Length: 151
Image 1: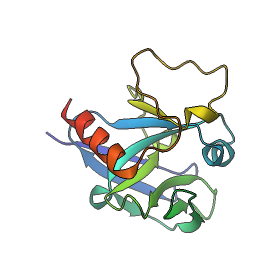
Image 2 (image 1 turned 30 degrees about the horizontal axis):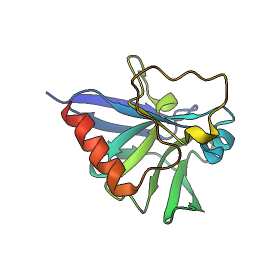
Image 3 (image 1 turned 45 degrees about the vertical axis):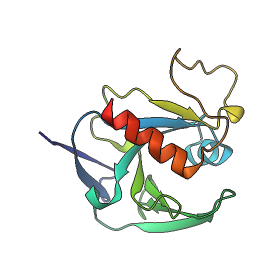
Image 4 (image 1 turned 90 degrees about the vertical axis):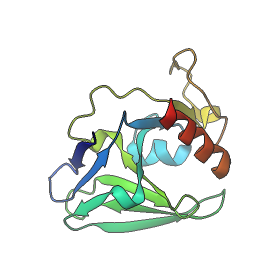
């Protein structure tokens, strides 16, 4: 049975919802863009099917060109500036929700870490959790995600 998942920005003006069967799939990205945009060591991100995600409220889009190709469109609240989610044109079927914006992030454990070549030295990754030196090939990552959903 699907579970209703909700979340939003700091001020509550921009909200989202989606339904999820099974556990949420989240991964940690250690790239410099994620470090700078979160003002932290990495971004904890949840993969959501694009067609399942509903945004309510006002948002502004900040777009960036990716070195690997494609454009990332980041959705921010225009009032509190929280980055709630982003979608990359290379992965049109999925949207990335920032895990810190979930109303209930309890129970999340990353299924992978990407851009570990940029990982801070003090961060320990649990044994057995897959890692990628940089961004994985889009098709490889989609296969990997599909396998994890079935696990």
